[in-house]
Image (cartoon, rainbow, N blue to C red; front, top):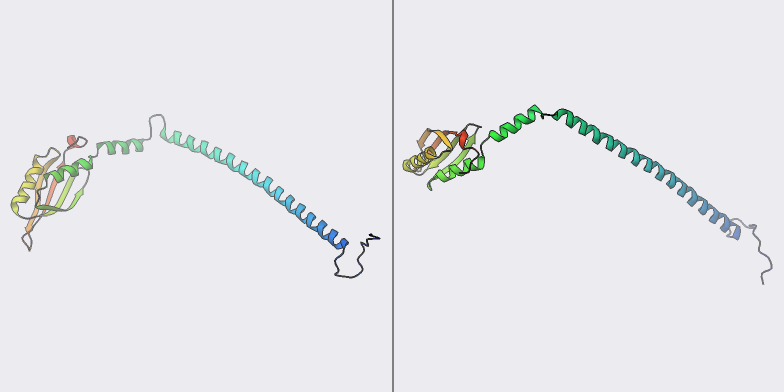
Length: 177
């Protein structure tokens, strides 16, 4: 039988029911404080998220307004200039395909440089007859005009170095070879 429970501590640093109750109350109080701080932080974060979302929406609408102002009803002049330049540029795949179709088996290209109007072709040929055949094929191609052999020299080993300059025909740019 239990006669009596003494809740008053008689010795220091001795575990009694009173110290257990105070420790449990302290842990509960600490947990409540921690939960309160987390709740406050959560509400602040929610407010920040709402504010950021409203700022994002505002910036999106401002961006759309700026884009619409720049484009205007007729479109931007610089955009139209770029679009015209791209439309009037040659179909480079077709131009390079025409060069390779005109290329004999014993002629090798070292480089092809171009501007919007002309092409400079550097290469090597096994003999002058192959180089002449390449020039003839380029002249017959509807994609090229003013085909000119700029330089030609025989190198050690019997190969002929050459440079050819030709204009690109405007009427044939966008059609297939």
